[in-house]
Image 1 (tube, rainbow, N blue to C red):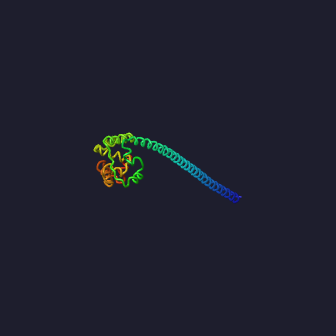
Image 2: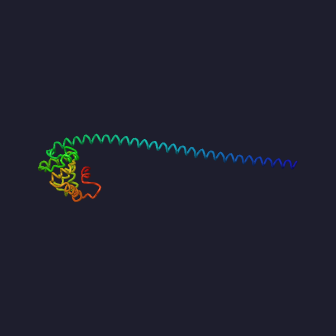
Length: 211
């Protein structure tokens, strides 16, 4: 009886140990499943947030692109209106018909006058009329120019006004009675010595057109 009772107790202990190990195993497995579920849910949430952020960024880019396109169209319309207004103002200049490149684009003017060597004479009144017209078309261009570069003479200002309104090198050559090469040198000296510009990638024409 003693041996039987002892054996029975040992079997009970073995069953208890087995149940305890099964419970520990199940607990460990459950913890693993819960941890995996938490990680998976967090990953899914992060993934959704990432997609949501990407979608938001793409929406912003699309909206910005649409705004830029709209602004570009509006700017183009304004430039066309501005060009027509300036052309109308230029046509009122006393010297407008004396300067061929103001009536047509520079290439056409160069072709028409390639073999012509005629002098363009402008009176003091016409010079002043050119300056006033440019000022009216380009927000007081000569006033701003003299304020920024007070060492400029009035003749320098007149020259800059002609460059500002895209008078061709051929017409500048005829106005100042110098060769086209000399006109180019004059522009370089104006840029370097009078305006103090050292950027070699920007010409005098570029600077004055955006001034």
